[in-house]
Image (cartoon, rainbow, N blue to C red; front, top):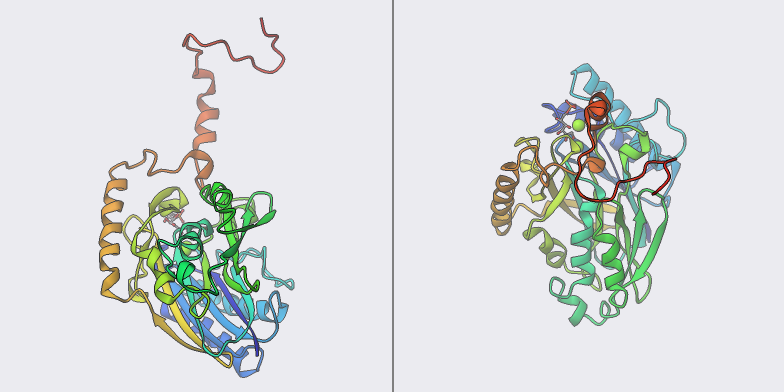
Length: 379
Ligand code: F6R
Ligand code: MG
Ligand code: MG
């Protein structure tokens, strides 16, 4: 049976501040989504929360980009927003950029990751969901899962993975994407995906048969709205086992925390901390950024799960490491590299301050040739 897995997420109001979601808001979103299940529009739904974001994990047979399915999510978030507004939750409805649904949820605020596949004899998938970061946070773990044999032994050992994977990389500024083959184009791939402020991995395919392996949400909310309206806290779907990386190979990159963009005010770097569902409440300096992993077995389109995969003492050390990494960065306060460079900050007062003080800048004789401004003739 061909199944579509659609994960659609939004921040429709925080409790308290930007730290988590109020249970009444979550319940309303669930209720509306379950109505769509009762009406036969979707086969199943599971609702996740990470920090101040809610994700609807839905299965159906309508393919990707189905307006009917997008509308289910839109209505659920709209209804949830009503409750959030009633309770005066913080930033109620902040990710819903329009008043009315117009056929496709893309560009309307919520983040979305969808894939369609023939359900295998057994279909284990993991939905990752992060708060206080952006889609390029997945670049490093996706590289390790699908292209690094030091992480994924299956790339060497499993004949069906041995040919490698194809990465689809998106330039978030131009909207152009490119497909690169690994292992042969690995270094080209890394030129792009190591530049996390511009490029993010959109999807991964198994080279042998072009089967879809992973899909990430790649919205950049600030670019979409043309101004800062909240972060694009991302989701990622990964299929596991039998010719895809094993569950443990998919989770392993998260045991070694790395730095991502998006902490406090979307303007700081911080370690991505893998946590259980109940620990996904970022309160230290509005962070550090969190990620949860929800495991499902899909059975005839039904979502059996979620299993809370980072709820494992084997990830305790990663949490401690992330806390220590956070301490080192917090020591830098408002100084880079904890603070992001100006062009990466979600909002900045720099242009205003520069404008206010521009007449007080004086040219200093540094010994270097004079920089000619437009219209001046070089001597
Ligand atoms: C939001 C976030 C927070 C806010 C911060 C300021 O996802 O990461 O760190 O940016 O709490 O929020 P405002 O500007 O709404 O007061
Ligand atoms: Mg928020
Ligand atoms: Mg958030």
